Length: 626
Image 1 (cartoon, rainbow, N blue to C red):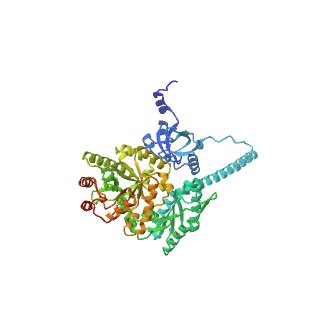
Image 2 (image 1 turned 120 degrees about the vertical axis):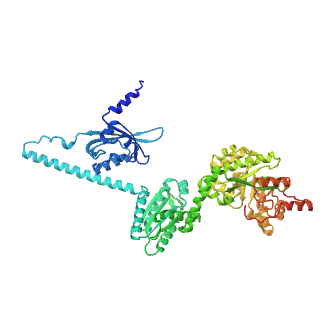
Image 3 (image 1 turned 30 degrees about the vertical axis):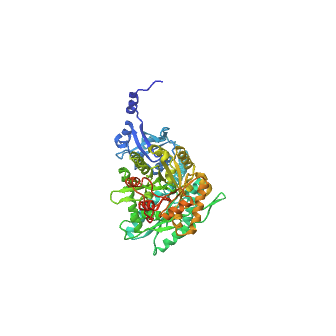
């Protein structure tokens, strides 16, 4: 096949009399586009130089003298991705009116999926300057022909006017209305809330914003299907219509988020009553194709008052109140308070500091020993992440992990900690200090992350010296195919699986069989009362029996005293962990303790002098949480 020379293409650009332009279009709306190229004829016809046109919206091709009906016709065709041509009067850049034929052709890029428009503009002779057609000299025939033409023209104009009127209504409706629910859409809401704020500033018309979110919408979508999810959204929209006044604005912002604008009136009690009613009505069961479920709502309420410095903040305030309602258990509503605003600012600052902390690698591992109950020697150390904050000092996980999880940066923190643990083990080995293995806690999000296995492999930590501790609630909530695959891969690598905090969730023997952990850790809330309350011991013995019966080794957490250690050891626990053997400590402190004790933290059945020496090393410390 003959290759067309580049100079031929350049001549097309120079000599083609038809104005051509290429524009890339939005995937969501064909009428939204940006010009990317035009030829010389386009510049000559429209008056826009190439550098003036490229980068501009396609609206520069719509002049002030283009008829509104034609404009709406063009928008309709573009929105529907239809190829079309239209003849009309339009304006050049300098405002001159000319008659043109404008054609649009839809192009698709199969490699990228992008949508393009090829626009063609041809300048036509002005139809107003065309010579009048020949008219018959017969006055009767002339009158009949003129009347027939006039009637036909009027009828065509009436039809076209009706069509354009319907089109204008359709375009206006589509621009302001949510297609699924018929409520106002986000675009219309954003326009309206500005109007309400202006009325507040000018006339003192106070109003409230109710931000509404369906609590279990994802569950309905996943369990009953997207059609059921759509029906639920329509049902929620109808409920909000029923509970509000005609003067209120009800909008769907997208997904399962709704918002209401309502005038405050004489009392805020009307607003609280409305919020109460919304929460109450949405607690009713929802039925779809014979299957029933429920989907409660959370509501955040904020009021725009005349004396506010920044009423534009009212929507964000209602969103903050919604977040607070969800954090308090969902299925409820909350008024916005200044305390929430302060918390929001603090959270944003914390998020900013966490990003800096990731860059500067400010996270460090702390270690708490696990003691072999038979020998009293260290068997492992649970690694607990700490943040070495530059101004606040060492911060515990509770101060930052939830925010880090919401930000999606747990993976980055894990990589930093894995590298620290690998380095610590290497330094222990080089110093001849025996630390057999380390245990790490794994969040639900990380356990369901397919890249977690890769991160373990690339950390450099010997899998045979690693225990992964999974919270009972994690595996109960997230036991899907990815989690199952992750656990199987860890087992194949040689990583030991431990089930942490057993007894605090809703575990069952079948659940234990499903996850197949090698180690079962009994939560400290079961261990702590056994010294003073003999009635608490049978339950601990039963849990130990379950673990032993399934071939698992058992860890007692929360061991605070010598008596704790004796009791759980006699009951059959394999390992002991708690403040009696030490608080979580940094690498240097752990190394010093291991050197000082020779790795032996407890003496089970030694003579009195040995017992006193060991107790001096592991003094009881009241537990304040680890």
